[in-house]
Image (cartoon, rainbow, N blue to C red; front, top):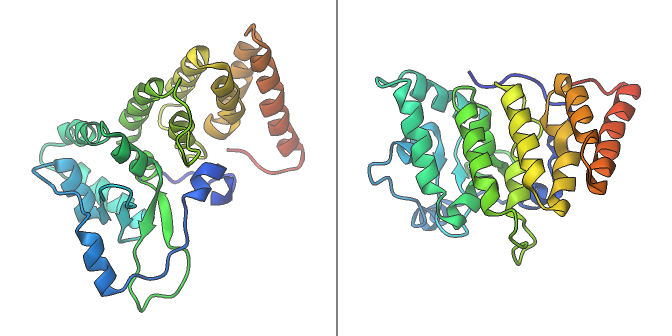
Length: 261
């Protein structure tokens, strides 16, 4: 089902990079929507594109934000039901994820799926926040998709580990790992922990530090002690520093009575 575990914090906990992509938009006029439609990704028989669209999300080409026409929770519920009730379930899960993998082979498409979606609203709707989570983040909130999406993300990260930041300051490796922060529920916490540790072991030092300090925002509390012990056996200075920073901050929050994941 759609994940239900409450967040430790509001969306203000998202990273600066992701927050920067969340832009306040004015309600689109009907004329503006027509021009946006010209940038819509065509289905071409893709079950991935079709199910997203019928659930309320439209993929866009180029630098145009993907568009969400319904509330996030409604989108997740619709997509879950479409997958779960599909005649070929559970095989449809593999087909859907394969469609996603093929789609994000293009770096621009991958980037769009990692950045926030634009939340379309009617002209008569009340003003408010006109952005949403990224498509990947939304898909991670659906239990039957989460394990396959996480596996796919960890297969993608190594492609960008040694690349420099883009002209707009976005580092793709960080952006991919940011998707895993503050998930309401983690279906397989042990597997996620193992994959994070494996990634840290091969990452360059600057990213290694970033990944380590992100662990409290990614892993469930029950994994923290074991991960801390494993990292303390690391031989690099950046590992030791990262462990001290991220886990001391976590303990400080506990003492302040901020609750747990």
